[in-house]
Length: 500
Image (cartoon, rainbow, N blue to C red):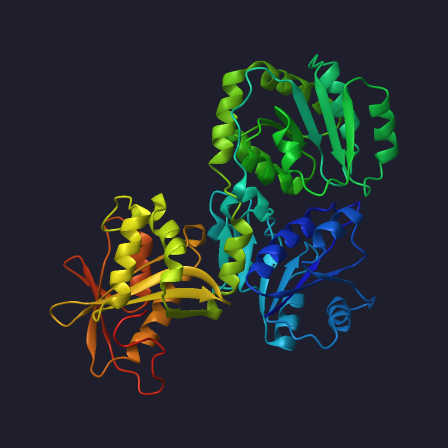
């Protein structure tokens, strides 16, 4: 599958658009996609280092028509998906591109200020009602993937183990985005020393794309216990080596939340206002919106609170960790790839993968048997299931990567019972519906006569109820039922007497 991403990065708009698209590209590569990044100019060094080995980068060929420039740049490539992360591109461009290639289109947005013609809109900012937000500008069929659970940050953050907030703040990290367009970093350094009277270590992080870099270097050279770090390959270690963080309200907000670092967040652009207001109301950060030099005193007061109140810092960490788990890019990539989902017979080699999913708390919570299972017991169960004449266990895959398990059991009354669960990182994106559709297709190839397929859903599991209803199941007396007829068009690839 070919995915082409259209996004830009420069000193005016910052690096965030391309940075988050590279996180998506990384996840798409996991599913075997070839990804091409198209930008209006060459990417800054810090982004090129992240793109290496993940995407092919092309500079947009100049043309007075934006869509024609895009066509000229990609040449003979025929994309399956086009991803757009640009506030200046709207439904007119989207529609032209979709007609040209017959492709699907994903838009990364948070403004909701222009018409969009997309199959999927991703908005990882916090909002009261995303459906209302996009109701008048997206098509009725557009799917909205919304909230920080879809935050586009590197998959490396999923493995981060946040540490407990230190009782005493020993160091502060400052990062105002890759370009710091208003040149605020130096002011924040001064506030730390003067208004907040902090005399510990301070590290400022920036990139070579920052036009204020020379002045920032001079400010750091004249201060004790201050380090300036340029073009870090990633920021995970930076977030984790400091007790308090000061940053802007862009994409790095979600990286910081995942690392669980107490923070003072400064909104430096209009589209960040909704983010910092929500973070503040949730207690995940102390937030100030930049409105000029008059905001400096408010920043200083907020910083003093964070530095001196250990309990406040602990509450911030707890609230932040509830928002982001680091798997947002993987979820979005999988949502784009659900049409590629296939099922195959399970084997004993799948035992470890299945065990990790089955024992996850989110899976057990909606299972008929919610008790944890030890691996030896799971292995015995799987061996028995694979040898059974009355059970079919299948693994759902997207381009060879396992994403879920679906099982059909013959009951004593001749009916089939279906049960399924997916990789717990991939819930809520349609994987279950795709698994059910693929599983029915395979089982139909085994049948000689119509059977009734039943499913049991725990009370309160509304997402599963909606899934089965969409698939044509009807609920009666707590059991969901659907007739399944034999398929004469295509025989099943499953083994008739078990799945070993």
